Length: 490
Ligand code: GLN
Image (cartoon, rainbow, N blue to C red; front, side, top):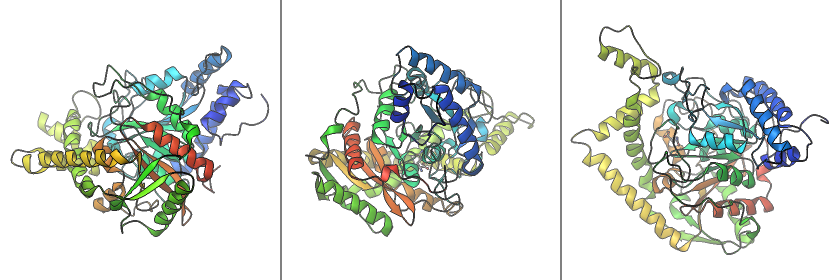
């Protein structure tokens, strides 16, 4: 094989090089692991970096390539958020509670990625149980932003975002309950997609808030997002919330540009809380859409969207308090054995196994669900959720896409918001409504503010991820923000 491998490529560029025999999947993976290990000293993007099993996966991919059986992901390195169960590989959810948990089965998404021939670079760092917006709430240390190591990469899928942004791997998977794919994508200058609720199986994904979360792709261009989504989407007999909707070719509409797209910019999201540098970058992006055939409508309103954040912080902790009840020290995971009674053992297991943010969520959720408060909080939040869903349906009657900034600010300093949970929660002001409504949404890099990446947020109709990706692809034809890389990283 000739020359060193250029790692800073998209997955489809690697796929073409592999098919052309310019290098092997094994050589690509060896180079990837060497770079990832080197970058770990400054990023801490992984909880587990893959070892020899990745080389065995790469050898299997090479066999498929030789036999002409390769698809777009065959032999492509991919990072997996450490919330997704991987058979035989530690799966911690970023928690001490699962510090010794080695699953006996793969989650459905990992099964599909193996079938596609992807090669796993490792298990990416995250906020504990995906609760957070900075990856600082990990029991395995914070992940650093490749654009500035003193800043957070966002969260909770911060490790997945950071390793893609740093050029360690071209693609990764994360999960998004309230913004955990899109916010870190925005903070690190890569693309991140939250699929429609029910588009991707949650079977085998450590549960946080089951009615809100989806697994989704990170990548450096729309074509890679489309191919990765195509590989992981689809109905699954093991997850009854997946929808029996056929999986299209998500690149099918890539030639169509912005022509005929009606884009709404909701008044509620243009507001005062947005940093000037973020607002400017998003306004410039809107001008690109408008100049190239999209119709922009600024007369759109989602009046109940301002209630999405409080609704989320009732529904998500309520579901979390139920989902996390299983960690009792008896069945699996961290366990305290030497307390005087069973109740003491359980109390100490949970007291020492969970971090502060997780305990805060369990307390919030248990309170919201308790007798006497259920109607006032949880039930009311569900009613407002229905209102928000209806407002989205109305907005989509006349628009193909809605457009907002992904986040009100760029990446903040490590430590800056750790003592102020409410300031941390405000990061997801623009991303949470799509989870509440169950609709798909994508963050696309659209500029820099003070040298840090800004994300453009596109929200689509249920099961119309293809329209989001068509718009992102068109945007990439007119701008080159998706090609920008952090200055300090290889
Ligand atoms: N930041 C939000 C939270 O802390 C969303 C997290 C997520 O999407 N998993 O709950």
